[in-house]
Image (tube, rainbow, N blue to C red; front, side):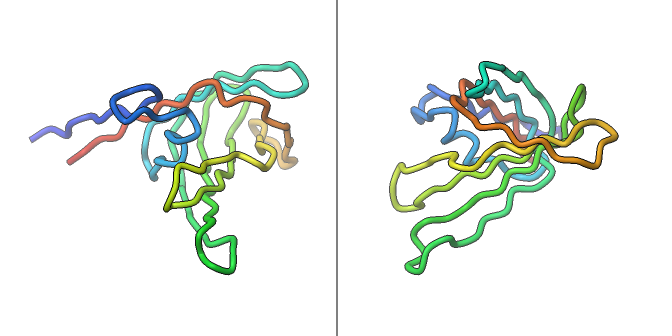
Length: 126
């Protein structure tokens, strides 16, 4: 039996914004990202979610941090985005700079995100 593909995108039935979609990312999801940065540059990336880890960031356990590590092709080997969210509300924010690892490079490049214009996931359900 073949696996079914589930597409999770912004503005679908759930009414997700792009950052809400990113917060849903799980390991092995295919992901497409469109990002605008404060320096005026844009990045259009596709890849696979390598890891998506969650940890508490507040004393009461309400605010969580999801670290989404994406393996990409092209100019960058990997991209890391941190999403801060409250699991009891619709409060999702990207507050940290996006970390880029150039292909074959050891040095990270950090860029300040102005707008996550789009995020779309494709998940294979078994």
